[in-house]
Image (cartoon, rainbow, N blue to C red):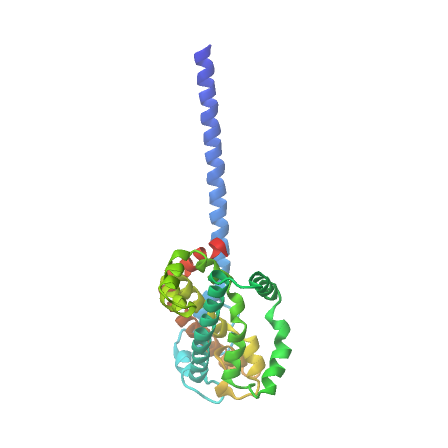
Length: 300
């Protein structure tokens, strides 16, 4: 009887284990199926944009997913400026604005994060909480105030004004970088202070060389803001001078009712070309980008 009971218990345990495995496998299957479905939905517009950019037809064609005739002529047209299309100038404008914003914003973010993480002063926690509170409000709420401030100083319709808008509040995005700096051993900073280093020397010669992942993350994040922005660029560069536009504003102009039948395929070509630099940058820096995000989230 004892042996039978033991065998029955073993059979029941095995059945329970098998049932648990089946449930787990089903859960994994449905989880992966859902991810695949979402990936397909996410990729469809991108694939359509790329395919349409190689269409021989210049206007919008939504009757077929694949072009009826294939051609790369619209890439050539896009890179050849005319009265409407100034893509090379737009690209260089956006690149210059993104580079300057990237440098200024990265310095602001890293310096604020270092001050909040390493230094101790009165109202430190209050300032941190205030910064987090400000981030809860969308930046679009300040658009009108920002525009009239720039207009007062004559900085509308200028790339300098756009760089200032992108860079001015970047220090509020210090939280992830602060979380990373919290993981830097304090013994390094204390040893440097004992050797006579000031805060600037500690920041530039000790903390930054050991913080490559968070620097890469901050650089990419700062570069993406002006590269992809449309709203502030459209608001500030409103004089109608085509050569001064950024890529986002210039490509949007191609979607005007009077132009879309002539320039829609060029618009798609522009969308493809704009995605190439940031894609290359991300793939090269992906390892450091992910490491910066994960390490910055530990204590952030």
